[in-house]
Image (tube, rainbow over all chains, first blue to last red; front, side, top):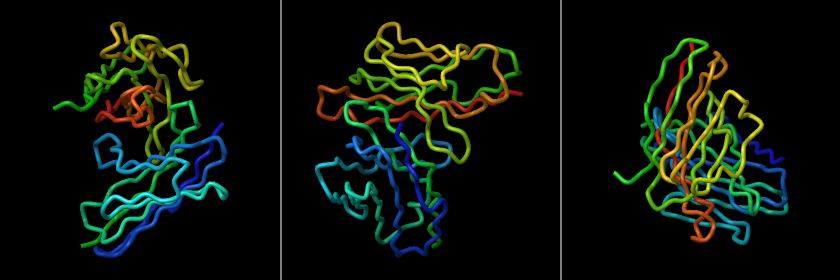
Length: 112
Length: 117
C-alpha cells in the first residue's frame, strides 16, 4: 500500500518568514495530493491540492510543488502569520481509489 | 452552516460499553468517509459509502465496528464493547463523488473525541 512520509514534524518560524513542509510517497500510481490544515479541536481543512499532471500550483501565500520522478511534493507558505499556526497534513491518493493516505503531520508555530 | 457536522463532539464511556456517533455530510455530497485519528498521527481510513452502499472497509475496522448510511444521507458509526485502544478522534468527511470532477476533494467535520476509561 501507499506510504507517505512527512518532514519536519515540528517547524518554528518568525512571523513574515517562509515555511516549507516536505512529503514523499511510495506508490507511483498516486495522482492526487491534497494538503490539510488542522487547528486545535477542529477537523482537517483542505487548503490546496495538486494533481499529477501539474508541477506547481499557487493560491495567494501558499503553493505546492510536485516532483513525480522523485515522488515528493512540498507545501510552501510565504509571509507567515500567527494564524497560520496549526498542524499541516499531506496526503497521497492512488488514481481511482479516492482514499488518501496521510502523513503524520507537521506542527507549524509562527511566532509574532 | 452547510459543512459536515458530527455529534456528539465528545464522548466518555467505560470499557465494554457501546457507543454510536453520527455524521451529517454536506447535502449534495454522495460519498461519505469515516477516519480515526490518534494523537500525533494523520487520519487513518476506516470505511466509506457511496450513497447507501458501503464500498470499502479498512483492516482497522474490526468486527466490533459497524457503520451504516441507510438513506444515503447521514451516517452512524457504532463501536461495540469498547476498549481503551478505541480512544481517538473519529472524523467524518464527505465528497461530491467521482462524476463531479471534484471527487477527490474531501471536506471534514469537526470530529467526535472518544475517551474509553
